[in-house]
Image 1 (spheres, rainbow, N blue to C red):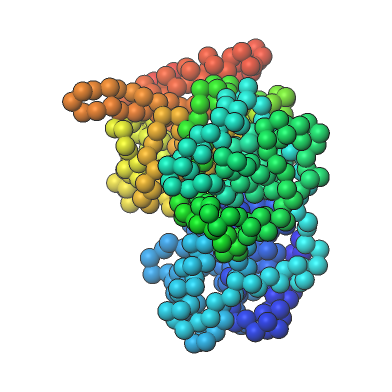
Image 2 (cartoon, helix red, strand yellow):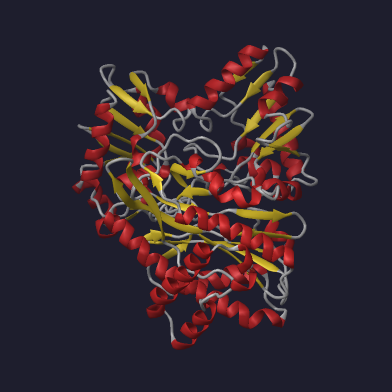
Amino acid sequence: MSNNTLNNLSALREAMASARVDAVIVPGTDAHQSEYVCDHWKMRDWVSGFTGSNGTAVVTLNDARLWTDSRYFLQAEQQLEGSGFKMMKEDIPGEPTLTEWLAENLEEGAILAVDGTLFSLIKANALEEFCGFNGFRFATDFRPFDEIWSDRPARPNGELFIHDAQFAGEDVNNKIERVLQQVDAAGADSLFIVALDEIAWLFNIRCDDVAFTPVAIAFAYISNEKRVIFVDSSKVNNDVAKYFKDNEIKVLPYEDVTKFLAKLSNMETVLIDPNLVSDTLGRAIDCGKIYQKSPIGALKGVKNEVQIAGTREAMERDGAALVKMFMWLEQNVASGNVTEIDVWEKGKEMRALHPYYRGDSFKMIAGYKEHGAIVHYTADENSNATLSADGLLLVDSGAQYIDGTTDITRTISLGNPSHEEIHDYTLVLKGHIAIATQLFPVGTRGAQLDALARQFMWKEGVSYFHGTGHGVGHFLSVHEGPQNIRLNENPAELKPGMITSDEPGVYRTGKYGIRTENLTLVVPAVETEEFGDFYKFETLTLYPYDAALIDVSMLSDEELNWINAYHEMVKNRLAKHLNDVENEWLASKTKTILR
């Protein structure tokens, strides 16, 4: 990928002028509406230089803007400098939205163009209505990047492998049967599947086509009569070919998906998720259609007992790896030779000691001092800070193991913490504990819990602008639905078997960032005849908090007792994975905290 974004932007404008396009929207996603995409689809990154997971570029013949959310404000400001793009803030009162800006800056009759393979039916329809209302024309066939991006990477060609039922906890036939029951209940005959993690889950297959997420670039279709996966044949080895044959799954080329959909029987009704299926593929389907959320997401989000047991084991080995990493850091930081990137490399090295490790679940965030205030900071050769024995270090990391996915954030003091740092850390920890310890009735949604994590900050006029929790997959995407914990309303209820993060934070621009994150499991808690049943969260993540940053005077007895009980659990469950020296170090970090 070229770093010369000004030249790339100029090339795009030349293509726009040639096609008589006045404005183009370049999303940061792919043909599957993925959060994380392979290099082949990083057109937005190529033209703007911005690499965050959320961001949408708009280019006109004389202006260029990029909209992103609060997680990436600082990163976008830095990456867009000198690129020809100006950062725009999403979801901030008083800031123009993407469409508001277009309405203000395009003339009547202007052509707004997109690549219809990258926009879902929902998004494309909304843009079409927007254009009609404002007197613009809308085009969905503008695809200039194959020509202007001369060294554009090809689609990845990773090899598929089977995620055995001993780890998945359910075979492919049972999964397909359950999914088709949901499809039938919706009044459809078949289901077209676009999301890569849904395909991986349904067929119990994995791949390395996308960094940090073990999925394959593919589409899929299932009905009572057919099971089809659209994937490059070079990705299917003999073992996987036999597995597909044994389970009556037909393999067709990835490029054949449009032709296949166009030939579906007029007598058939197919269920498609309009938030996932692209405008191009949606329009290719000429039979009956039911527009509804894919049933796979809700089924995938509830883990079975085998997955839960595997995740618990993955958390133990992950916690042990972090003990080794942070112990190494403590021993070496004073040398002045440890950088942020070194921390990431050491984390990978320690996790890779176990044969179940299949790589990180996202790029580690190791943010020292002011870098910690950049919510999704990634160290590179230009920003890579050298650590010293003072200040705060925020480390957000996770791993993919074949029996579970992990995601943990710890903020630690490298020495001489200030009163403000200790105070903020304890505020965050109090909110973290409030989520971890809350009982909630059946039917509760994440938005009903989110304020619990913010309450102590809000009392001081402090907040954070990201969600408090996201769903986590099983040897799949570290970010998955349907549930989350955030201020925005989400109709998905929290159900037993769902794994969700708990990660409030505070970010002081130019100074430091603090975030504390564990993964939690929804489990039954209390059954009552009068008030119904209640659930609670079981904490899955196993690594201690930094006692040097805790102001005990700010904690209630219940909060302090919870921390001490958690630390005792961490010490006991990690012991078998550590040697004597490491256990001694861990014991020093989990000592009972007294007033």
